[in-house]
Image 1: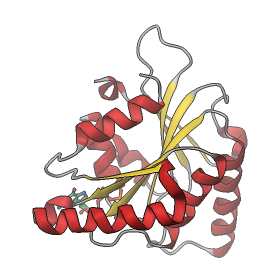
Image 2: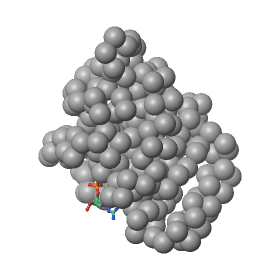
Image 3: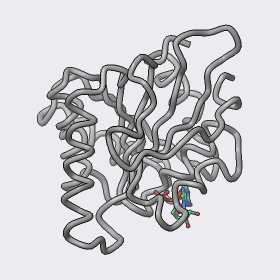
Length: 202
Ligand code: GDP
């Protein structure tokens, strides 16, 4: 499992602070509290990996984790995008963040795919659709994790999955895939790893 190698690399607050654009990277987006940190931790089998993304002052930065296997080039990164839609952020910071994310999605050659983490009980909010839209416009594949699946029974899970699948297909076509997930029970962790590893060529 190449994900267990993941280590904090750096946080970028603007374009100049990004690592050189020759890597392979996959970005993770999600509204605050959706369960993105827990999902990253579960994928990487580390309890506190994504905690760094939540330290005050880092909440408006792109946080890079390096999971490059030995003797592999170019580097392989996971990128934690700032959570959004919950915490109150001052207007000017919001505009700065928006412009940064915008530019990142439009120009970043290293970006190979997007994972959007959504609470299975509250999927496809505006922010989620916006992020998926960015990826699809660029022709990048996206994968939706419907997390906290442990909060629902099997029947409700498959119903939610079915509804989201249908909505994603009608909004974005077949470049967006979706699965049920739980950082708590680890349901769907292997499936999610396979998708991300595939994009990273690992
Ligand atoms: P983030 O803000 O998107 O990074 O969300 P966190 O990963 O910090 O999770 C927010 C809250 O949801 C925390 O209280 C977590 O314990 C809880 N949580 C996250 N993932 C799951 C999950 O898969 N199942 C359950 N039951 N709770 C979860």
